[in-house]
Structure formats: C-alpha cells, structure tokens
Length: 168
Length: 140
Image 1 (cartoon, rainbow over the protein chains, first blue to last red):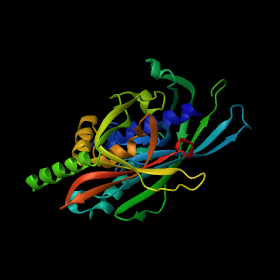
Image 2: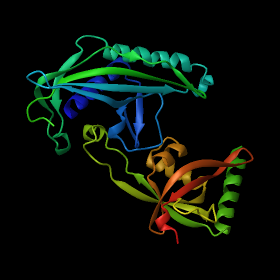
Image 3: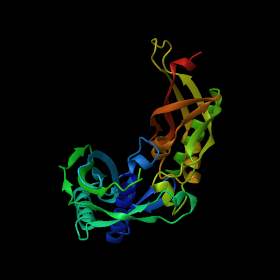
C-alpha cells in the first residue's frame, strides 16, 4: 500500500509541476513543487497556502481476487489567501486556478502508472518498477469553505492498486 | 519609519535585557535537502538543531496550576533576534518559524509552543510573546 501511495504522490507531483512549474512550496527552507504529503512531513501547526496537501484517509481491501485489490481515498487539500498585492480580492480566481491545475493533472489519460518501490531511495538506490499498476479515478471536488480571508477546498481522488505478494 | 522601527526595537531589546533578559534555545528542524525525494516520501528523518534565542524574558503565566493540568509559561522575545533567525534559517516569516519549531529548551526542559503573538509599539513589531506548555510532571 505504501508503494501505491508513494507512486501516486510522485506521479501527481510530476504532473502538477508540468501544468504549473511556478507553483512551489517552501518546506524547511527548500523550495519544492507545490504538493506535499502531510503524513510525510513534520507535524506542524503550519499549513502552507497555495499548495496541494495530500492526506490519505479511507482504505479498503478486497481479497476476493488472485491479488488483493486495495482501494484508498486521497484527500487533496488546498487553500489560498489571494495575493497581498490585490488585497486578497483575487482569492476566488486563485482557488479556481488550483481547481483547474488539479483537473489537468489527475483527469487526463492514462489514469494509471506502473507501481514503483521507493524504499531504497534513502540509501541512494533508484526506485524499482513493480509488476502491477496504480490507477485512479477523476477528482471529486468538495464545496469551497471560507475561513476568514482564506478560501479552502478539499478534493478527493480514489486510488486503486493490487497488493503484490510480499509487499508491505 | 525605518528610524522608528530601529528605535522601537532597540528600546524593546533594552527593556528585555533590563528585566533579567536571558537566552533560551529554540529547537527547529534543520533545513531540508534540495531534491531529496527520500525526505518528501517520509523515508528520511530531518535532523534538529538548537538555536539561541535572546534576549528573552521567561515567566510563569499561571501561579497555581490545577492538578493534572499542564503549567503554562511565557517567553517574551526580541523581534530583532527573531528576524535574524528567520532569515538565517530560511523561513519565510516568524510565524512559520514558530509553527515549525519543535519547542523551546529552557534549562534542559523542552516546552511546547502553544501560540506565538506579536507585540507592537507604535505600529512596529518589537517582540513576540510565546505561550509555552510543559508537562505537569516537570513542575517544581
């Protein structure tokens, strides 16, 4: 399951970067493409705006087939305060731009990618391609919520993968 | 305005030093490694560093702590010191620095930052008030 989560994140990051290379986020002094996985970062009260935050929520395993089919829910959270130069009055436009980027990154075919094993990356080893794919559905957008001057939205993507033999 | 800011901040620094100003340590994660996908995937744990924060005034906010409740303390810290730290550690603002910090080390005890608020004088931020929480067991 972890391999599927990692693969989906890396794929989404690459696609979002291709759609809008200017969307970045600064994490501990390093500028990265504007998407991160909350559970992979330090627990912090700070929630970056104008960036996509992935949160893995639902999990279901169907063991009926030859390989267990894993269904995971990925919440993609994002928010914007607008630009300070415009007094925040463009926050609706900026949220709409993020909606569009997400659609452009998740929607186009193929909505699948070969599952990769990234566990050796910390030791300097390249990720290893596995035998099955990770695939996902379209984005389901939640209602935009207003928190003071901040506009927020939670979108959800369902991600499927097969649990290969020996995979954790 | 720049002169006013310098004057207000210097006055605040003098005030903090005069009120028994001391130094504490702010425990923050070390800067990330550019292009390191292991960090992004949660495979590599960042290191932590303790950086000196001063002059500060450290005080208890509640005299009597209810049994089992964490004792809250407060640190008043100079804005000029925070500004130097924010820039040198690569944080975008003081609020991000405090939100990312793991806590404040005071005499070997690690206290959690509950909130950080700005202190203003004449429209200039001259310091920060950090509300800290410690475990009841640490109370002396």
